[in-house]
Length: 339
Image 1 (cartoon, rainbow, N blue to C red):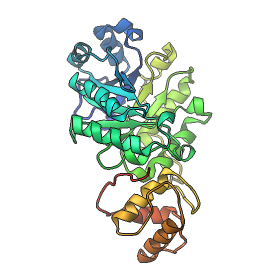
Image 2: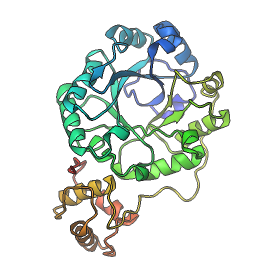
Image 3: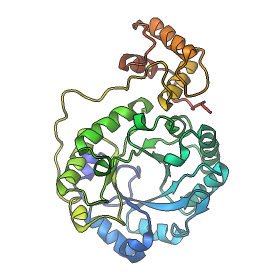
Image 4: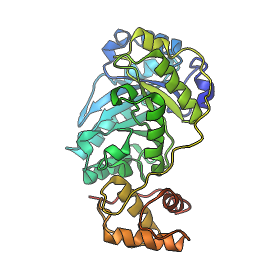
């Protein structure tokens, strides 16, 4: 089901893809219609909301608010219900166990919220992801949400969470007002920064801090323009009346600028998750690389060799043309190896 259709019509029931369409995030259930499922569903339907993302765990601790009874009641109202967990990276196996409780409670999907606590923690991220998939199976719908600008958080292990066996949908937190950018600038940079990971985008927009109605409408239009899987909003708890009202008008699909976002340029000597992602793909193709976040001499030589083999200028820099060749027809997703 396309976002272009879902954004214009009220939710009619649970969809096969819980990330499609329009979503709303709930941090504390009692602050959403007093925790009453019928009241929650009524307001969600009025705002064309298809999916609710409700906090189900914080680190290794499950939250009791994500109960089988609540999930069943909301699903009976025709809503998709997904759990989410803020990761701490301190006890990855226990955190995976806490996440799995949301699935057993009846969740339609699960979202991993990995932010500053996970920066540089590749080993912990891998342990968590492997343990989670072992518990919930390889096909259960999992999303990943984190900072929208990958380039500003170079050691966040995006490549683990969005790699093989990880999440299948990327939900970057495009909180334009908090960032200090317009929705259009924030959206374009997010699309560019996340492009190398190749996962469908379902961005989270901002309703906290009282954003302007025009900006909320602009964000919705941009979702259509970029043809994302869906959009959702942080959060029910903090949205103003005007913020809710901005979710209901029909919006059209705007034209995008002629200059579209491209793959990032990554130079030798840098250190980032982009380097990890590139190394994984180079290794998959048989080139020799190291197993950390550094764009070292060994990696530069591997990039140059790949460029020469691909008919590209052997600059040793990961430019858009090199990314395009590296990410095409290479046997699928890879699993991050840094750390």
